[in-house]
Image (cartoon, rainbow, N blue to C red; front, side, top):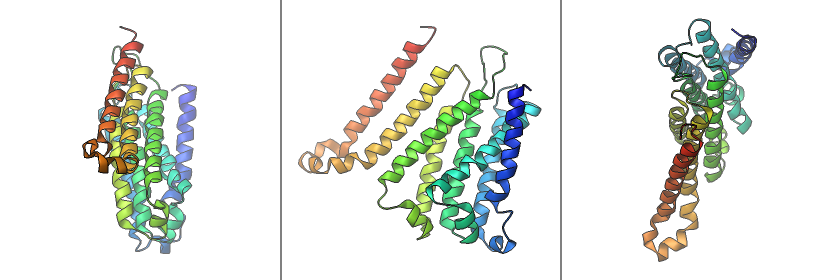
Length: 275
């Protein structure tokens, strides 16, 4: 292993060891965890995410990912699931320690678990495929990390649009009202979007241009759908009553999809080194 790989390996191990007890409540008194089904959700989400990452690394990762490199990417995956996967909900105000372990809030546990699992999905997808399918050359750790960051930040943008379009505060409904229905709906949307982005970041590495353009196109399609689903019907309410053929703004949504698809094809062709 190179010096930078050793550095990231040690850093990932240390980061995971620091986060693990706090995220899973190991420092809490057993009374907080006894007869608390909500506390099992974060644990199950981590287990599911790491099972997916292990499956990808064992079956579909680059052939060079063996031995210590298998452990390297696995522990890196554990670090991102336990770190960003849990902390992002805390930044929004849904906290594992307080809401799940102390208050036994199942709705909060569902949201937290869904985000941790979605993070693991995208990281696993970023490790799917060969680093250099045209030769026997080996890639580097920065390739899956780069695609993971692209997919994960795209997920944050789409989730941000979802939250802005909600009537009232989702955090209030989850933390104060403990609404299982709202938590389940958001978790389903979150995991569904993560599955689409996981597919976008997966595959053989043919270069940053083609790979990141593919991720960007999928993200733009998801963002466009969410914007149109929430904003366009409201804007066109009056127009729809006068002109029913507008179909609730679906015409403009369809046009946006076509423009994104054609733009992606043209950019891929224009930037291709073999054209």
